[in-house]
Image (cartoon, rainbow over all chains, first blue to last red; front, top):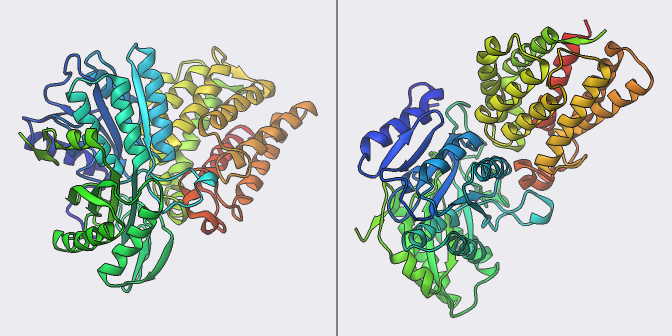
Length: 333
Length: 210
């Protein structure tokens, strides 16, 4: 293993220390339990948005804390769900009296820890709603499994819900925006290489030099198929077709297209892929009205990409365009 | 014969030792069908539990189990944190105020612990989870209690039942947790959660049957 780290056990703590030093104008970091929260938290009268998950997906979630997006993010150990005590303390720290929305990705551990945290927070008199994002179409037999994984749509949900909260909407209205993203967003990813979890020390899975995994999860979970590496245009087609085929896109729909890097793929390749994804969407009669290109929900140093399509309406477009100021996403201010 | 407060403490220490020894083994099992964090998570959790031992050395068994549960809940993460946290919290509620447990008390505590895990994780027998080791162990204990067996005999039988349940997860297709995403590809691998559950129950036998 060759990594820019000190002790594997200290990776998350030392990263958070760096974040605190780099962005004191935007965020504060609380240690033991660990969470990143808005520098001006709690914002009185505003619904607070909280998310969290295993570390190793940066900038998600800690990099999305700030004006117009998350109020707090709870980082777990690398690829491991955070714990209820973190979520409870973070929920208390950011509650401005209007309630707290928990945005949860659909993984067994995340669900259980967030459920326990929500119970504890309600026990302390804080109004909490939770919405589970499950947008990964690579998981086909979701009735017989833990369901579809939460991936790219999570980033979009955090931005859109953050804007809705900033606009002064109620907890149930902000949760409705989140449920709309959950219903209208679909994703699929692929990997060219594996990744190495620092405390494990060796690659999560073996992927021969000339092969790729289609339908990969963001923790290196195997996908639909493994095959020889193909040209980018064919790979993008293999991701786009299942996404478009899945509900709920119709010809003429407006969409946001999010081409995401898994951590080890450079922007030159992501834009090359975006070009093809845009062409395929257009061919299907979809109108790409907004987009996001870059590494926003990563899997450590994995090379690969994912594509997310989110159906848009006028409200979502307005929320997407609203100002946001976080370490990982910034426009309009 | 009964299980004393010191026996309960000794069991927790044995668990910490066994999970440290099996850290790499559990990581390997989890790497095959999950996300390779179970061994490290359990080891981290029980190391945190060990730092709490001085505070609970003079407490009742219920407090000891509840402290273990709360510590695991806040340090393990993943699915293992809430599941093993619930396991020990539920056992602790049944053992509240007790300075020793007879076989019936232990059956009651373990039954509540396993019911808590099932409630939290919503897994059924055969889903390729912890439950596949835990439920047979509880059933064997109940049977041993009905037949008035000694604690030693009961623990031996329930540990054997857990072992068989754990081994029986190998051919199963996972229906819960991250392994379920593999579908048929999850068959042929022993479940890491069932394995850690077996190790914890075996630690009880090794500590208490001698």
